[in-house]
Image (cartoon, rainbow, N blue to C red):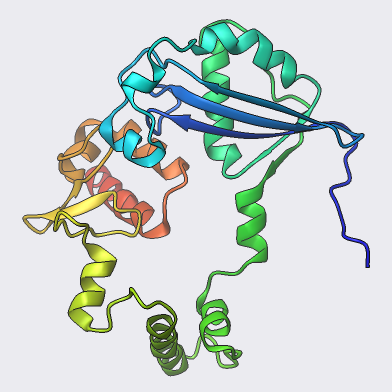
Length: 261
């Protein structure tokens, strides 16, 4: 059987960015990669390391490995903007989390550079959304993956609890480096190599004095409660970004507490 391929009606550009942070307003792009697929199958590649003209925080370097020394002497976004805009003319866009992350960053950078860039009449394919919609990540999917069986009584409280146990056992059996003790599993899920205990899977918040404090980002070290009181716009931005559900729940709860005061 012939392998199915993308059916294109115009070129499509796959875009990925590395940045100095999470906010398109305050952070800048340090690396950009574009793969443009033409209707006849030809591919145009574009790659650039950029001087963001702001310092690259250590937590950002931990993610992408790009240091301040590496971008020294590189062009800034304004210098590459005309060529990049030309490359992206008359094509659709695709990427992983491109809707929430890459496109807002590009829009802001082009705006600051004074180079026109419009999303009007562009079709956008977010591969993250395709993945999440087609590859379920619920308990039934985990049971099928780790245990090779169907969860036929999903959403029955006891059966869900039983299946959860079987999934955990399946994970321990599959991954040799996964601890098999409760203490070890607890540390694996919640601690980093510095001994910090996190309250969410995104590891945005660590527990200090029984209260959530930012573990990364521009407010690292500050209490979530304080940021909710003094910088609610930042929390609004977080809720619109690609953060795990338990992280969003902590943020939303803090905002509701402040709104109720």
